[in-house]
Structure formats: structure tokens, C-alpha cells
Amino acid sequence: MNQTNNDALSRRKWLGLAATVTAGSALPGAAALAAGPSDKQPKDLGARVYNIREFGAKGDGVTLDTAAVQAAIDACNRDQGGTVLVPAGRFVIGTVELKSNITLHIAAQGVLLGSADGRQYHAVDAIPLTGDSTLADGNVGLLFAVKAENITIEGQGTIDGQGAQFRSPSKDVLPPAGITGSHRPYHLLFYQCRNLTVRDIFLLKSAFHSTRVVQCEFVKMEGLRINSRVIHNNDGFHFISSRYVHISNCDIQCQDDACALFGSCQFITVTNCSFSTRWSVFRFGGGVAENITVSNCLIYETYGCPIKLRCGPGSRFENISFSNIVMKDVTGPISLGLGPQPTHAQSDAQPTHPATGSQASTTASQPTGILRNISFSGIHATVVKPVQLRDAEFTSNYNPGEVYSCVVLNGVGEAVMENISFNDVHIQYPGGGTVEQATVRDVPKVAGEYFQLGVLPAYGMYARNVKALTLHNVRFSLASPDYRPAVIFDHVEDAAVNGLSARGVKGSESLFRLIESRDVLLTAVRVLTPTDVVLQLEGPGCGNIKIDGGDLSKGGTPVVFKAGANREAVKL
Image (cartoon, rainbow, N blue to C red; front, side, top):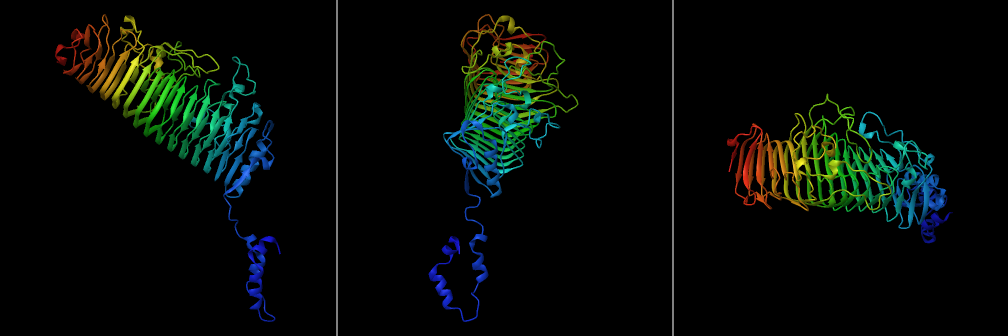
């Protein structure tokens, strides 16, 4: 009789049973007793700990431990889940698959170190690269999961992708790892997973995007620190067609998009996070993006565009809120684009994405996109001219439109964005705009990257093809003089501007410029510094413009009319 049976059937119980047995009879339940509890399900099934060292992992920073880590995960999965423990040590791995019902716990002194040998990574064939262009960036992960559920990655440890080994020293030369482009691995790659949690870990120096989440539901990213500035397209988070995603208490320092949402992303919240990047923080592109809130975030040292929405044909963006956001030392800072994206052939001199060198394309056969019900509140920003990121390992170039940047609402062609609101928005700009820049009227009609519009003729806000625009308690200030208008409305209809304060410059054309715009109410407007003209109307389409109250005493001439604008179009 084994020890388990001894524990289950004590001597006293045995004697008690024996006393009740009559001669020639069998023990009651003898067959069951003989089988014993070994046939029963273990009490800790699904809750065991699988230390990767017990599966052969060395953790010496040299030995390849991929097979050992995978063996621990497979065993845990076979036993209906549990915790796979990465203890103290540096465990070199290539591609590893995570599976359902597993918690990967990385101890504080534990490191999963991505191999510097590109041969240790392989594509995940179950993740398609065709059909949806947003998936075409690659399907290789350091850690990946496909159609799995109940996965958690946690702990105070580190996942280090050794991304610098995947950076080419020059064009057409392979990097030390021997692979480049879409063959490089993400830190984390998830496809069609449910109930996914990643918390507290440190994601360091990815070879590509850090965390890529594709067509997943019920996702939580909590307390993460991401630092990836070794490759031009080091994204932080990259979500594609995912729903019920919640990001909180994360610190992201990356090189490309810090939090990209592509495809059809819905029911997303981002709160209590900080971001710094060369390019964009919140970037929306394609598909249906709706029911999304971003709140209580700090954006700093972001030399691209902190909030960037690109809504092309066939896409719909609506019910998106940005609130309580501080931006310190940024360019941009907000850019909304609606309409066809420019093609490669549109302009040989067309600027390119500073991080990837790419240019956007368009599909003219699709219906006009929809961009509406977007709100910005409690935004306080300091805009600067871009400089190099302090800890980047390479030099970035900047386009002229990034050096002279402003808030951009840009509808192109027949596309009109609707119901856009700004409440309690205070932005300080660096200034430096010239008289010549202020005279520009032919702003390129493209809805691509904001810098493709060139140097805009406004320093604070440029709005084109917008209906139902609200500005309440908005203040545009300058660190140095700027001869461009603070605000330009170009084909704007139904705008309510209340409590707008802006700085002007003597010798400029005007502080505000309205082009072919109508049904605009300006109340409690304040001109903060002397300027020659407050409002300039251009075009016969201007009409029903009302200025009610405010302080225009430093503004010289209240209104001037140009390009066929009718004096009856405005009422003071």
C-alpha cells in the first residue's frame, strides 16, 4: 500500500472496517479503496508552478533556452494551466508560443533575452499577412499566442529584444542579427485571443513594435514600462481591430507610434499613462474607430504629432474623447485628417514619414469616410520646434511642417468632419512664423500626414471642411512673435467660438481669418497683444458671421474684407 493510500486509510479506520466484516464476506467498497485517490483529479490542477529551470533552462545569458521555456509552457497547458516561472537569470530565447490558461511570471531579476541570431525566430503561419493591409507588417513574435484565452504575463522582470542587433548600419546592408524588415520579431504578438492581461513588466529594446495585438478582445495592459528607441519603427502599443481594451498606468518611451489603433478598434480606454516618442502617440488609421476615451495622460518630448487621426475612404471615426492631457515639449499637437490619402505618384517631392520613409496610398472607389463627435477637453500644451530625442541611438530628420506646427482639422474634397469640440484648451507655440508664410492660400488638398500640408499659414489652428465646430475657453499664446493668424477657418460652417484668447503681432494681416465660412458666432473673444486687424473675411461664401462682446481694444481695425467677401456677411 503506497503512502497516499496510507494517508487516506488510517489504521484506526482499517480496524473499524475489519470489525464489521463477517466471515467470508468482502470488504465494503474494496474496489474503490484499492483504486485510491490517485484516480481522482489532483487538487492543485491548474494552479501549479512550472519553473523553467526544472525543464532545463540555464539562464546564463549564453545558452539558448527556447526549448526549455517552451517545454514548461506546454506542460503547464497540458495540466489545464498554471504559472510558468522565469526565476532570476538571463534566459536567451527565440520564438516561443504562449498557450491558454497560462500565467507567465517573470521574477524581478529574471530576463527573457531575445536572441541576437535572427535564425532563432520564425513566422507564425496562423497569422495572415494578406487580405487586411493592417496585418502586413509582419507575423513574427518573441512571445506569441494565437486563438488562445486566459493569458497573463506579469512580474517585475524584463523582456529584452536586443533590438539594436536588428538595425542595419546602412541601406542594403543586413544588420548583425541577419534579418530585417517584417522578419523582425515583436516583443509580444497576439492574434485572436481573449482575456489577455500584461502587467508590470519591463519591455526593453524591441526589434520591431513592442506589443502588437490583432483582433483580440478583453485586453488589459497595466503598469507596463516600454523603452524602445533602437529601431526607426519601434512602436509601443499597436492594436489592430481589437475591442474592450484597457490601458492604464503605463510609461512608454519609443521611437514611432506609441499607441496606434488601426482597423476596427472599439471600446478602448487609455488612462494615467505617460508617453514620449519621435513620432505620434495616439495614431488612428483605417477601419471603424469608435467609443474610445483617453484621459489623464502626460505626453512629453514628442516630436511628431501627439494625437493624429487619419480617416480615409470607407473608414468611420466617431465618439472619441481626449481629456485632461498635459503635453510638454511637443510638435503637432493635434491633427485630424479626413479624405483620400495621397498616392506615391502625386508628388515626386512629397515628404515622407520620418520614421519609416513611407508614403500613404488611396482607394478612390470607396465611399467618403466619416469623422464626427470628437472632443478635446482639459488640454494644456507647450509646443516647441523639434530636436533630437535625448536617448535615441540615431539621428532623425524633420520636415518643415513639423517645425511650424499647429492644431489641424483637415477635410479634403467633399469630405466634411462634423461635431468637433475643444473645451479648456491652452497651447503655447514657439512662434517664428513669417509674413511670407502667412500669405499662403493654396494649402495642399491632401489628408495624409499633417506635415504634407507644408508650413501652414496659421500658428494656432487651421480648420478646413468642418461643420459644427465648437471652441470654448481656448487660449493660444506665443513664446516669440509670429506673423501668421492665430486661427484660420477655411470652408467652416456652424462654428461657435466662446472665450477664445490669442496673441497677435503688429504688421500681420490679421489675427483671425475666415475663408468661405458661414454661420460663425464669436463671443467673448480677447485680443491679448496689439495687432492691426482682428478678423479678415475672404470669399463671397462668407455669411452670417457675428461678433458679440469680448475685448478687441488691442486689435486696431475689427474687420477687413477681401476676395469678394461682402460687408453684410458680418455683424458686430
